[in-house]
Length: 71
Image (cartoon, rainbow, N blue to C red):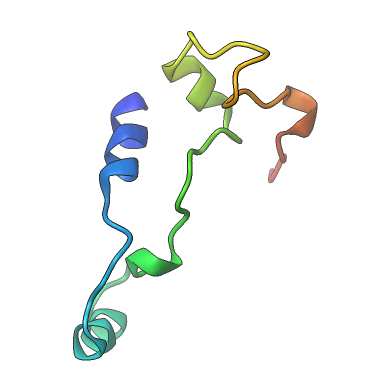
């Protein structure tokens, strides 16, 4: 899981030309970079399993009661 998190953070925020974005929308099943989350996925429990050094009091730590539960 930590590999996914690190690689997701390295993805550039975007800067494509309009023609390239239009082609992307019609040919690629994934969201364009500007529509993706631009932050750390500290809402998922796997984040804390991948980075056990993050503890209460750290800027990246979010209490379990503050993390959203989707399903």
